[in-house]
Amino acid sequence: MQVAELAQMVVARDRRALARAITLVESARPDHREDALRLLEALPKDSQSLRIGLSGTPGVGKSTFIESFGMMLTGEGLRVAVLAVDPSSSRSGGSILGDKTRMDRLSRDPLAFIRPSPSQTHLGGVARRSREAVALCEAAGFDIILIETVGVGQSETVVAQMADVFLLLLAPGGGDELQGVKRGIMEIADIILINKADGDLKPAATRTCADYAGALRLLRKRAQDPPGYPKAMMVSALAEQGLQDAWRDISTLVDWRRREGFWDATRAAQQRYWFEEDIRAALLARLQTPRARQLLDALGGQVAAGQKAPALAAREFLDTLGKTAQDDV
Ligand code: GDP
Image (tube, rainbow, N blue to C red):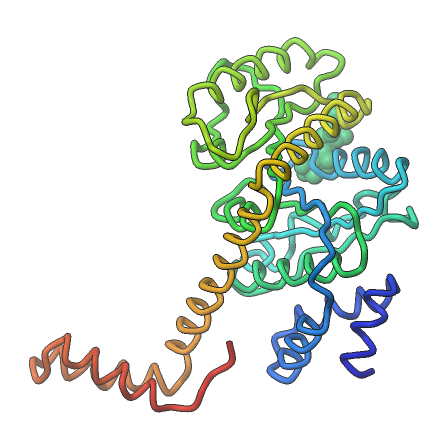
């Protein structure tokens, strides 16, 4: 199939075309990459979904939440896409997200589209492909795109750079310490959801929620937040409680940001971030080619033997690399 035709079918909301298009952007083959870039270029740029990032450690209830929250949204007639950014798939060969029989009901919902995480060798690759999958889902007319990640390492930052709103899912904690949630993650969260606020866990959830509400108040005020945000609230994904409230608070936040110009400004900044990130990734990739390694070894040897000054050798390396054929970006 031609790229132009594939683009048309994605825009016409053909689910198989969308799945195929995502497979194309996930491919590492250079010829696929060329097609993927042309495909992305052929997409209309005017559609805007609400992109919701969601993070939480394994077991906190992400899939349960996405299933019930997603079902609530499709119940309102909204089209929902679910994507995963899974940094674990590279290390373990398996993934924490996406490949279990998760979200059983949602996966059968005609208004929903669930895509497991691509397996890639590094987070940078996963990030780019996820971002492109977001663009494809957006072109395919999804109203909401949920981008899920596990609460480890750098992946929240990556997801936050492709989301309009960022949710952090936590479980009720036993003690009064803040569950070792890193400050950096707190700082990117717009809404902290204390999940499992049901049954025996309700009192602990209430305490945890109060703790986090307190901690959020201590954070530096961000320009992109209306009064009362970021906030902490309780939900039960299992009992399907608090989900409407969470949705209402997300909508309030998003409406405010749109009105105040933060939506457009944030998206513009994100585009620029990804532009620069792609350049960084491509430059790093060029350092890994056999030719670059060879040159590094040769010049490195001369530097180590005191035959060449490091700065001079570095310049020679960059000049030589710059003259070699263009690599893919
Ligand atoms: P994930 O690893 O973050 O995707 O977590 P899961 O959605 O797989 O949930 C982990 C476990 O927590 C499962 O046994 C769920 O049934 C349970 N769980 C999820 N949400 C809730 C909830 O709201 N209340 C209670 N009590 N259990 C929940």
